[in-house]
Length: 215
Image 1 (spheres, rainbow, N blue to C red):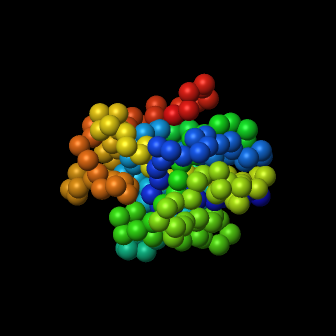
Image 2 (image 1 turned 90 degrees about the horizontal axis):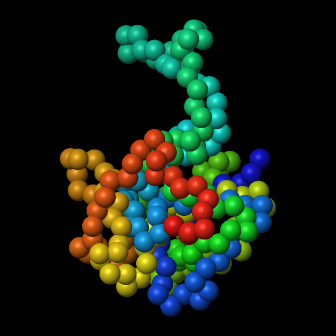
């Protein structure tokens, strides 16, 4: 069984980061849940982790529960079975997953910054996944994180923003994912700004397959 590591908190590429890019360790995969230059909604961040905690990683059949007089039971009818295609498929369909980087592929060397009341506080789930955070206010580079946690056979999930420091507002992508009855809150450690928002497409259209570009 492979290991699952979830990087959680705020994320940003510093303007003077050295090196600017790093490489995914061999035998690992890195899942990215935002586009390069994108500030991700914390509603989306939380939903990604909650989905993994509640439904797990792999594909399986599950039974649709019936409810009679307020009591749930599992129907003894094979017609009530529903196929769950697994975490990656769910993330694609929901418009959450942007890229999957294989071992040896380049990726921008984003920094992970501490989680806070804005992002919410996530914890590891024993036997399922490990949440990696930091208390370093200067942030921890992705290459350092992957050296420590990127053992062969590891699925690494970069849930935070892929924001870029000092990027002009017109070039910044703003994820507007959230419920209509509450304001959209961003995982932006610098406090927001006048940036152009957009709605991600669903049903896998947001997911980007391998290409020469790095977004």
